[in-house]
Length: 182
Image (cartoon, rainbow, N blue to C red; front, side, top):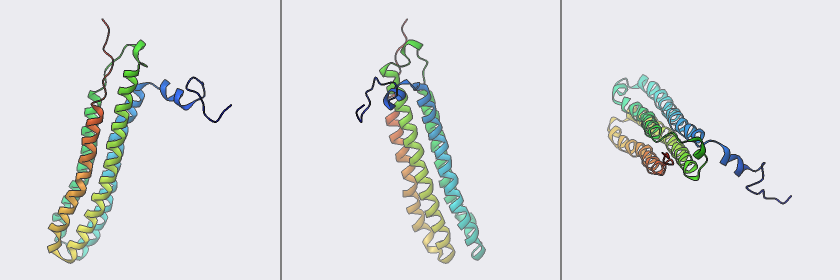
């Protein structure tokens, strides 16, 4: 047998991917959107929170002011929840005869890709905001005039998650399921 498998070959990856239900791809995409977004938020809160607690020992005044960094991290999880709800509304029932139609496959792949993009964009955003929030807490403990300057950078880091949400919504617009026949 040659190095490449044909699409009709029962053991090829392309055939396996085409035979997985588009609803499965959609469900996995929705789960990735919310799950990985929450993971990014939790990781960011862990990074920010540990530095905030440590720096608050030296300068207790920073605790309430630097909680904004934790809120920015939590917003990342909210982005994932919002996109998961939007993607869930894209699901439609399709007759069994049309479940593997090209239009159904395209809709399933679009929701899957949208979920992956949103999830991993929010993972990176959570890490970014967490690291910047940690730096903000540590530098604010040393010099309070740096807080606003670093907070602006943190806002730009938080925009990464919004870019992922926007791209995910644009990609999910491709999810159109076949029309039901009367």
